[in-house]
Amino acid sequence: MIQRIQSLYLVIVAILTGILPFFFNLWIDVDGTEVYANNEMLISIVFYASAVLAIWSMVQFKNRKSQFVINRLNMILNVFLLGFFVYRSLNLSGEASVSEKGIGMLIPVFSIIFLVLANRAIKKDEDLVKSVDRLR
Image: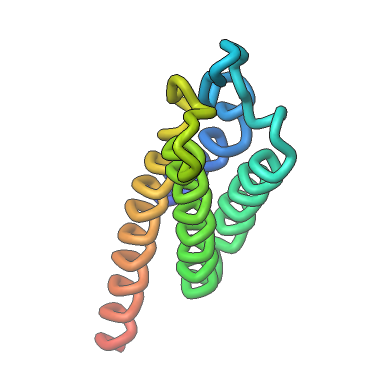
């Protein structure tokens, strides 16, 4: 489990989504207050869900197909979170409630990148196992 590269990618995703959003600001309001993930309940729940999915996927190391599906679900969750951040930063009402974007808004992008890398490594392992089964 730990010696596989996808486990490293999944640990990075768990750290990115489980710890970093609570230390890096997501955006700065017009008032000058920094908004973190723990200030918004829905955002913190989505970040925690993404971290739990990454850890759950890492624990499912014996079943590569379910690992692949869990990572896909995690990617969809991160795309929704990224879409919410884009919507929030480009407020449609014309009044800008987000004056500065923080580094925390990029966390779903990095998370998606590492999930894609993990899925690529899982696919490579699955292909290797299938090629060995063909030789038997």
